[in-house]
Amino acid sequence: MKKKIAFSAVVLIILGVLIGFTLNTPNSIADPETYTCGVYATPFALLPSVIAIALALITKEVYSSLFVGILTGGILYANGNLELMLNTILFQQDGGMVSQLSDSSNVGILVFLVLLGIMVALMNRVGGSAAFGQWASEHIKSRVGAQLATMLLGVLIFVDDYFNCLTVGSVMRPVTDRHQVSRAKLAYLIDATAAPVCIIAPISSWAAAVTSSVPEDSNINGFTMFLETIPYNYYALLTLLTIVLLSVLKLDFGPMKVHEQNAIKGDLFTTEARPFGEVQNERQNPKGKVIDLVFPVIVLIICCTLGMVYTGGFFSGVDFVTAFADSDASVGLTLGSVVTLLITFCFYMLRGVVSFKEFTACIPEGFKAMVSPILILTMAWTLSGMTGLLGAKYFVADLVEHSAGSLAIFLPAIVFLVALFLAFATGTSWGTFAILIPIVCHAFPSGEFLTISIAACLAGAVCGDHCSPISDTTIMASAGAHCDHVNHVSTQLPYCLTVAAVSCVNFILAGLIHQWLVNLVVAVVTMTATIFVMRALQNKKQA
Image 1 (cartoon, one colour):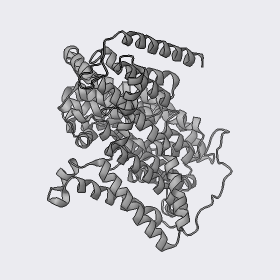
Image 2 (cartoon, helix red, strand yellow):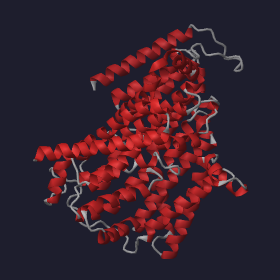
Image 3 (tube, one colour):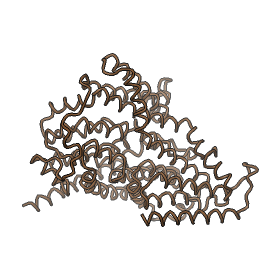
Image 4 (cartoon, helix red, strand yellow):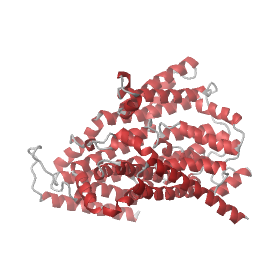
């Protein structure tokens, strides 16, 4: 607490110095066309992001950290003029908060998030998740099958990590309990197929958020860039591979091994902390069936796909691949989710499992579930706008061009580690890559190296989010699995760090090779070899 207070005091002192410095800078706010910022394209242009990152690392609180970063950017751009600072932060047409929220693409992303929240609340209300869990428990016959089925469901629900966590836990918990899979292992499976799956799924809220983080003036198609990063997103891909290998080989290590051994003996929790341990039967809609979960998910996938290719001109004669690459992700996902919600409501009404009153009650529930990501996105967009107004892209591009030299091959690995530690400390991926992606885009305007570096940023952000005990996804995975949160974090951390180490090595190799297929094969081989080596060492230790 003392460190947080001391750092906050330092930040206030820095802001005071900045105001004093900029007050002495000649400026004119009478004519916006001739107005110039005194620190444009200088090291001060990076100060808003640096302060936001440093404050987040120390306080582990993302909202105030982003706000202080925004405030710093406004003071610097206004040359100390407080009136202009407020107008810049709120109303500046190229980066102010109101401007960001009035942008149709950004609003589309926010609407998509709310609609996803409503869908989750609606499916839980009709009992579709519980019905699917009951069906699965009757058809899955082994511990390996239960773990792989949990992973498969997590992969299928790829549209949003919140959607994933809120569904997979309630669906698969009865199945894994029956086959004596520990709650800690279930929480890991949920967490490992939430953000890592969403970050490689083109039809997801994450794809839309990443796309919106790419600066409009960079001449980069955000969605096309997202598609190109998928084969380089080693952390996400290798996490899924690791789940399969650990499940099939029946391998566990670290604290997770103790939890799994105890689960086989009948103790699913291991420790005294047993959240929901006494709950035997949850109240569910008795009319709910498997189709009430499967149908909305299938319709959502189909409608969002059609919505995206529609915005890309597919129905006007453009081929599917081109239409998908040129699509407006924000508009497509919003259209698809609206149509899905209407179809799902009609379907539930025809089945008689939900009333209109119950449907309307799910609307505020869905909105409340998405308040946190909406706040993070809004502030991250504004911070990005402030750094853009200060000319940070030009300073970083010039700095990298003149100083990277022979160290350029290590930059993807460095970006990966920076994103990892930032996301771990703040508990958010979105805020992390919203800060770092514009800097990477300005440093590498085009080419394969840009793709690799953005992939490293996304992978690092997801890795840090996956490991972080204060991450929304980590907390919801614990709740979905009915697992003690400390147990979940401590048991999954060795798995996450193992994949992170292998990913970091492969980002260094990617900086050398620049061939996605070769790099991907090498990544798969190195991850598989690592797991088999760990298995051999464990067998040797037990012998």
